[in-house]
Amino acid sequence: METRASYLIVGLFVIAGMVGLIFAAMWITGTRTDESLALYDIYFDGAVSGLKPGNAVQYRGIPVGGVIDMRIDPDNLERVLVTIEVRADTPVRVDTEATLALQGITGLSYIQLTGGTQAAADLKAVSGQRRAVIKSRPSELAAIFEAAPELLNRAIEVMALMEKLLGPENQERIGSILQNIEDTTGALANSTGDIDKLLSEGAGAVEDVRKLTSVLAENTDDIDILLAEGAGAMKDVHELTTALAGSSGDLKQLITDGSSTMANVRELTGGLAGSTDDIAKMLDEGARTMEELRKVTSRANTMLANIEGDVGAVAKDTRAVLGGVKQAVASLAVASDEFAKIMTENSDSISNFSQTGLYEFSQLMSEARVLVASLGRLVEDIERDPARFLFGDKQQGVEVQ
Image (tube, rainbow, N blue to C red; front, side, top):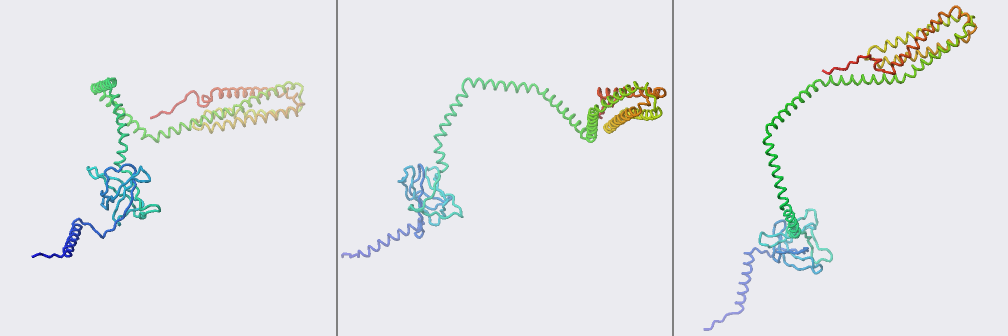
């Protein structure tokens, strides 16, 4: 009996089986049909060895898609255009970058997406682009491959230099250097005793220096006082010598005034023989003049005695002495003027003086000569050696304990 089969039923059965197989395969492989994808273009400069359609695309190490197309950029032959598809929820930002990375030791490459900050905007296609373009940057491995020829050339140059450095001539020199080093180390080994002795002596010297610094530290106040006193003494001596140098003109002027007075007196004595009137008045004025000269002499002697006094008050006493000398010069000048005035007003009475007061006047002249001679010696001593004049022949330093 002939079996009659319905072609429609058979066809439906076959279609249902194929659909079931497809769904079963999708379930086994985990493929999701409800997942949306996004397409991006990437332009790589140079070669993309090991990359082919179907290779993975990772975002920070997480698989997010794959490569679907590769071709030479028709607008620039030096670039390769790679099209990828990734899940639509992949955070591709405007600052995201794509690099090539090697997958193990198989030689295959995949695309690694890096970068992208939270504040950056999503990457979108701009005018003139068919889809959004992710920026690319060379990978570290690609940079190494690109620099490999240059590195190889440098390595060859270094090897040539090393070969030249290690040539026969330099080998002999290196051998000589090593021999010298060996001789030096041997000499040092034989001199260990001397080195130990030197170190021991150095340690002793350091200990002595340490003791000295300790003593100096303990006597810091005394040393400061000593230095301060020395500085003060030097300052006083400097001020004294400066004052004496500045007053030498006054002393010379004193001698000059005395000499002028003597000349005036000498001229007056020439006319004494013819002048005898008003002798009493002349004697009184002459007595006052002689008293002024005695005061000047006494003041000068007091000045010399004070100069030899206390060394600690040198500067102060010197200023007082110079003031006394100036005052004496002024007094002597006033007395000389008064004496000349008296001689002029009493020229008629001078003749009587020659008979009764000539002896006293001669004594006055003698004392004036002694005064002028003493002041001259004083100026010469001061100008010749001020320090010896003030401190004497004995100069005692400061003893450091």
